Image (cartoon, rainbow, N blue to C red; front, side, top):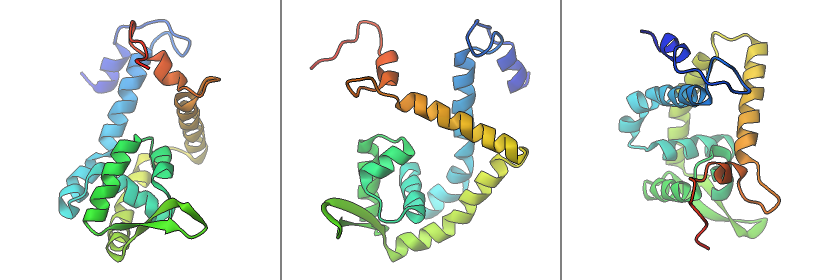
Length: 182
């Protein structure tokens, strides 16, 4: 049975989004999409360049947004700050980035691609562009705009905070009986 047929035959639950597709089905599709998108990375780049997925993400972002700070990259990627910190340390260790003080703001530390980092960025950028192009190749321009709108809406929903600045998503998904330890 095909993936789509399996998903459409899954136990339907009535939801605001659809009577045929449960939110769990949608989440499964999003996770599957994310995993499929990483196949070219793990097949062609990870072992060849000895780079982890988070290191790759940061390197590609620094190529597009030079002189970003770690916390900015964490926000752009949605990766937690500890994982970004580990990726930064690994990129530094391998001579792919340096951490420097921002001349305009001495308290801010910026990440700068080294010559080796620039070389890797130039080598990996075409592969990233191919993945992006292939992903939307069967969509018309208007459909890509609509997809981007939906993706932005989903990210905004996940990033929403309450009046106290707490993540509404994390509060909503807190396991029953799990209280703050603070």
